Image (cartoon, rainbow, N blue to C red; front, top):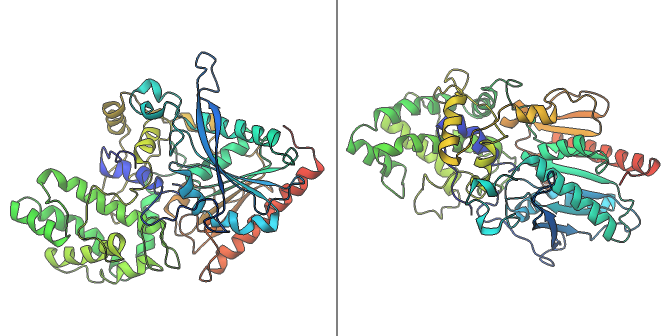
Length: 492
C-alpha cells in the first residue's frame, strides 16, 4: 500500500480523502478477492502491459513506462463486438476489476470485450518506477489529462493489434473518480469512445459550482433517516471528546474506550476526530442493501446497524462515547477479528492515498466545509489558503483550483453527447454530480436507494428496484450507442 494520506486539516481534506474511498472510485480493501486468469469463470482476465509515453503533450521527455491493463474476452464477439473500457481510478486496477460486477454481468449479453486500464502513478503503472514519488520533477506528468491520453493511445493500439477489434465501438465506464474520467474521456476523445457511463462522478465538485457543505449534508441525512437520535449523538460526540481530552486520565479513558492500538496523546486528538469523521463518511458511501466487502466487511444497510447504538444523545459524555465506539466498531471490526483499532489505519486504507493526495494538491481541488448545523460534524469552513499552504509544505507546490473547470468545461458541457450520469440518493458525492438530464444525449439517472456507484456492483437479489431499473436503462443506452456506431463509421 502507498504511504498514508496526509490530512492537513480535518474537514478541508475529509471529503477529498473520501473520494479515494472511491470510488469506486476509488482502492483495494481488506479481504478483497484478486482474481487471476482461471480463478473463476466470471472474473477471468489476462494481465497485459503496454509501453506508454511518459509525456503525451511535449517532445523533450521521450521516455516510456509499462502501463498495466486487464482484458476479459470470454464472451467477446470477435466480429466487431464492443469494448467496455474501464477508466482506472486512484488505486490498483485489479481491485476495480473485481468490484465492477456490472461490466462482467452484461458482457455476455453485449458480446463485449472488457478492458480495465490502470491509471498512471497507481498500482504497477509507475512512470519512473520506485522513483516516481521521490521528486516533484517525476510527478510532473501525474495529471488527469495525461491519464486520458494514456487511455486513448492504449485503445488505438488494441484496435490495431487485436484481430476483429478494428471496428469495435468503445464505451467508457467508470465510477467515482473513474466516472469523472469516463465522462471527460468522452468529452475530450469522442473519436475514441462512442459513449460513456459515469457512475457517482462528481464532475461539478469544483470551484463554486457546488456549495462546499453539500457533501456532509448528504452524509448527515443518511444517518438522519437511519435511526432516531443517531445524528444528535454523533453531533454531541465532538464536545464530549473535546471535554475529555485535556487531562492524561481523559486520554487514557478515550484510548481504552475505543480499544485503540496506541494510547492517545494530546497531539492525536485532531487526528482521532478526523478518523471518526471519515468513518461516518465511508459508511454513507457503502450503505448497501446487502452484506458487502467494498471498503470493509459490513452488514446489510450498515448505517441502520450503527444507529442502533446511538439512540440516546442525552447520555453523559462517557456513556455517549462508549456507544460511539460500539458504532465505529461495526465498521472496523464487524468480523470480530481486530484485536484493537488503529486511528492511523484510515477508512480508505487500501486506496493509494499518497497519489490521491498529490492530485488534490494539484488539479483535483474539491472544496468541502462543515457548519455543525446542517450537518453532524464540527464546524470547519473551507479555507483555500490553509489548504494551499499545506500542499506547499508537503509537496513543494500549490494547487490550481480553477484548472479542472477550465480544461473540462465545468457546467458548460451541453455541446457534448452520449454520456449517462448515474447517482445514488444516499451517496454524498451525488451533491457534485450531474443529477438532471442536460439533453437527449446527456442523461441523468437517479437511484434513490443507492449508495456510492451501487449500479456498477454485481447484481444482487437484495438490490432495490431503482438500481435494477438504472442498470436496465444504462444497458439500453449502451446498446443504442453501439448501434449508432455501426451506422456511422468508427473514427480511428
